[in-house]
Every structure is written in C-alpha cells, then in structure tokens.
Length: 253
Image (cartoon, rainbow, N blue to C red; front, side, top):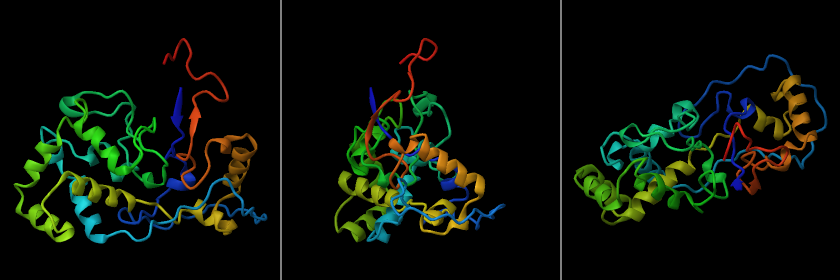
C-alpha cells in the first residue's frame, strides 16, 4: 500500500502561532532558550515555506466566501470549513471527519494549510490538483452529499454571487469558476515565516537548543527520507510501514 507522504501539520516548529498569509496573523513567538549558532547547511532536507506569488485577490475573496458557504452541501449545513477549520490548523482534529447527516467518514481530513505545495491531493494522492480535489467531498454521499447542478442552482439564487462571478470571470456561475476560485483561496493559505522557516533562512537563534537537537535527530534517524521539501512531505509516494510493520493484528488494514 502506498500513500502520498503528506505534511503532518502538527510539528510545533512550523505550527506554533503560524503567521498565515490571509488569516490567523499570529503574535511573534517568544523563544525561551536561544539556539547555538552552528553552521547551517544550505542543502537542508526541509525548505522554508514561501507564499505563492501572482494570486488574484478577487478570486481569493470569492473563494473564501465559497469555502465558508454551507450551500455547497446538500442539506445546507456543511461547508469546506466544517472539516478544514482555519482556527484549528486547517483541519477538524478528528480521527474520522463527520459528514452530512452526522455520518463518520473513514479517515481524518488533511489540513488545507499549505496544501498547494503537495504534489497530489488527498491522503492517497488520487487528485492531481486542488481544483480536481474539490469534486470528491462535494459529491461524496458521506461528506457534503451534493452535486454540481444543485450547487450552481443555489448559488445563482444569490444576486451577490451572480454579480461577483460576472465581475471576476466575465461569465455566469459555472462549475469550473467555483472550483477555480476555491482553489485560488486555498493557494493563499500558506504559513511562511515560522520560527523554523527563519532558522532555515540562516537565523540560527530562531529555535531553541532542544528544538535544534530534535531536528538533528530527525535527520540522523532518516525521518527526512520521507518527510522533506517545503511541506516536510507531500512530495512523493511512499509505502506505509517503511521502518516497521504498520498493519498488525491489533491494527488491521
């Protein structure tokens, strides 16, 4: 079994008060103990997160509204934000995310933060782009339970949406435009300039001695074989259970 090695979104070096480009502008974290100043290898396995340039602010604004709009679900109760809350790291922090009519899904929702840097979308990498990923949850019977004709019909009942799609796309509300604007918003959800990012940019004092020791062990134990790049993963397929059997009698597939 292979999965796309995805960014965990839980490493405190990256996620401690992340300074999200569009939302959640966090306070400057205080470093309790300054790190030593060793020479920093320019060929680090993990690279600093960079904002994506050239995004259209009009599409971002439209996509933000759609991302939070429960009309994208069949029962008008769930939005994208329901499982990808920006207040809790871009996910719902549930082992199994809850979809339409309270049905529990089979897996947890991956974080939407920095998802644009993943080379594939979904845990199993079955979607190549953010745009194509949107089809999955919106049309899933256990997630949002809707269809594109239903969503477009409901959005067209909003004069504000009709006006804004016309202004941004010069066209009526269409499936491709909805997916494009949501994906543009998701591309804006990068978290640059964390303490760890600053360390990777040669600011050695940005992390503590304990954190530096942990990162050194992370590399020496071979964790970086799978977890590397800008997203500390999400840039390759890797087998489950490389270091030890993942599926056991107590934890079957």
